[in-house]
Structures are given as structure tokens and as C-alpha cells.
Image (cartoon, rainbow, N blue to C red; front, side):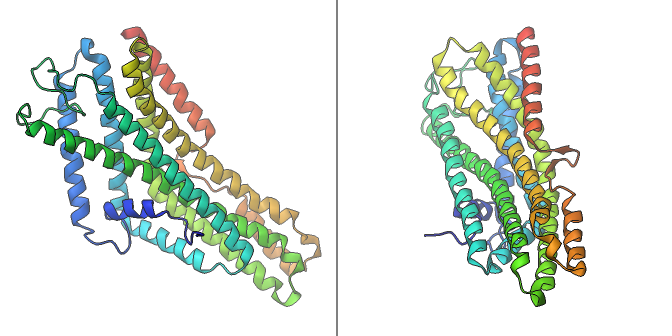
Length: 376
């Protein structure tokens, strides 16, 4: 069955789960619940890191800190969505209106292709995060052994304010941790997929404009000016949509930019120092790959959007503009002038997301990794 929207049902479920969907219920209770759960989890994790600081426990602390940073990043990203809930609602409503305004078969085909690509990406990224969580749980060693402080090991290292050694409290805590980490991983995956879906939706609208630009010359003279004005309005609608996406995701991208740099650094250091331990490598390597993929997706979406925005001026110039009347050419010139400003997504409004930004993340991570290696 062909999709009728760009947003996948999995993304919709995640947005409903955190209370960021136009008609979702419990818009106040759900954010309060997840804020309480994630804050409590991070407090216990950072408490463990603070009480176990030492050069002899550096590998363990770096892995715990990497997980803490990932969870903190997710918590901050969800908070940004909560604070900009009205803008997110407007974005989702605009996407629905764009689908409802599709009239020609070619435009529907282009949007359906982008929707299929978006849905496939959602499935792939869920599978990647699921494999990461399952491998991390399956390769935990010494689950029943005691730590140095006499406590039994947990799936996620925490300092809890109660004794969890005895059964069935230990099993309940373990099950809660596994369920929580899996849920948070799926949330992180779907928020990345949400960004990709928005960019693919914009790309589909740009391709529709490009296709209509090539068909302008065969339009009847009476309706040609109206068609050109419609194209200008569609382009302005895309610009406004990108501005709304930028207002919501620019600070999320900035936080992810710095967080991924540190996490890649820490995990890379752990891989370098654990080459003789296959069990540790199997646990850390999937996490390392997923974080790199997450950073690549973030930067590639910005690169893809920028390259797509250039197509409008290129297709406008490739159209049979010399067959238009002077009044019609002026409208087309206005479209070309507006398209000179590239559509971009930035990190904090000062770093454009591109493949060059991804190389900067890898370079910075490698530099910090070498410093850690020398100090260790």
C-alpha cells in the first residue's frame, strides 16, 4: 500500500509518547512523566560517575559517561520539542496541507517516493538501535558478580538510594533499566528519523517546483502567469517551512554536534585500549558505529537540503524562459533571486550542517582521543 504522508507511524508513535503530537492525549502528564524518569535516571548515573572517579577506573567511567551524555542529549532534545511544541504542530499541519494540495500524478509520485524512502529509513535506524541495545545487554559480563563496593552489577551503572542486592529487587531493577534504555534508544532513533523525514518532505516539494518549472512553456498563455505566481508562493512556503524547522532543530543540532564529538572520542579510546578483549569490543563497537551514523545522518541531511535548494535556480534557468512574455519573465526572475539564498540547517545558527561538519567532528574526536591515550 502506498504511503499517504511523509511521517512514519513509528515517528508518530514516538511523538505521541512524549506528548508532541497535535491530537495526542495527556499533553501535560506525558512530558512530566518522562522528565521525571529521565532526570532521575541521569542523577543516579552521574552520581555513580562522581563516586568512582579515578585513573584506575577510567575505561569504565568513559563508557558510563558516554551513555550519560547520550541520555542527556536525548533529554535536552525532548525538552526543545516541548518548548517549541506549537512550532512542531505548525510543521506537522503544513506537511498535511502539502499532501492535500497534490493535484497531478507526477507530484504525487514524487512525494510518495520520498515517503517510501522516509519509512525505509525509520525501519533501518530502529533496527540499528535495537541491535546496539541487544548486543550491549547480551555481552554484559559478570552480571551476578560483585563490584568493588560489594554491589551486584547492573545493566547501567548507577548509585541507587536503596539496597538492590537481594532478589527480587535486583531482577526488577535490571528489567526496569533494560526497558528504559530500549525505550530511550527508540526515542533517539525516531527523533533522528523525524529530522530526515522533514528534509525529505522539503526535497519532495522542491522536486515538484522543478518539474513545474520545466512545464511552464507548454502552459496556455492565459494561465501561465497564474502558474508562475503559484510557483513563487510554493517556494515562499518552502522557505517558511525550512525556517520553522531551523528554529526547532538548530539548537538540538548544536547539542548533538558537541555530544557526538565527545562520545565518539570516549568510545574510540575504549576500543583502542580494549583490543585484547573481544567481549568488550562486541559491546562497545555497535554503540560506536551507531553514534557515528547518528552524526553522519545529522550532517548529511543538511548537505542534502543545501544541494536540493540549488536545483530551483538551475531548473528555472533550464526552462524555456526566452519564450515567456516580459511580465512573465519578471516573475521567474523573482523566483531565481529568492532561490539564490540556499536553504540550510545549522547547528546553533553559526555552523552549517554538511559533510565538512562531519569531518570536523571526526577530526576533533581523534584529537581528543590521542590526548586521552597519551595521558592514560
